[in-house]
Image 1 (tube, rainbow, N blue to C red):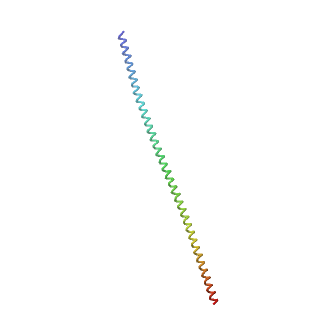
Image 2: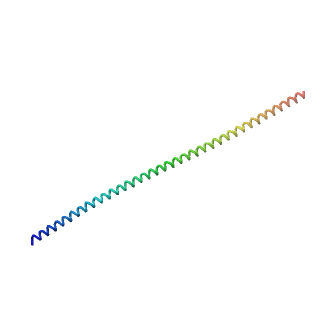
Image 3: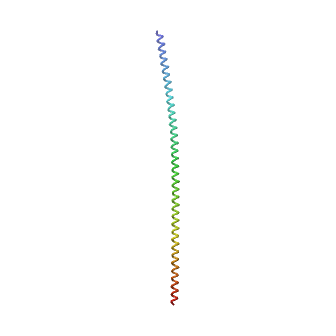
Length: 129
């Protein structure tokens, strides 16, 4: 009967409309899930970037500490070298001072010998007169 066919057609159209509505709702849910996943992935990326930045900061701090340590070592070596040079210079000065004192003593000794020789000559000349 035509009424039954119309009723069936209406029921089929209603069922089709329900299917479409469910499919649209599923698409909306899927889109929302994708967005949530993308947001979560972004949060993970941001967190990873933060961790990488912290790691980079730690590396920079470590490099700065190493540079400071190296500078201190170089300063210590420079001070040691300066101290050694000072000691060497003091030793050279003391040696030169000792050499000078020895030469002065030798010269004094030569003068005294010369005076004795002069005195002996004068005495000999006097005795010869």
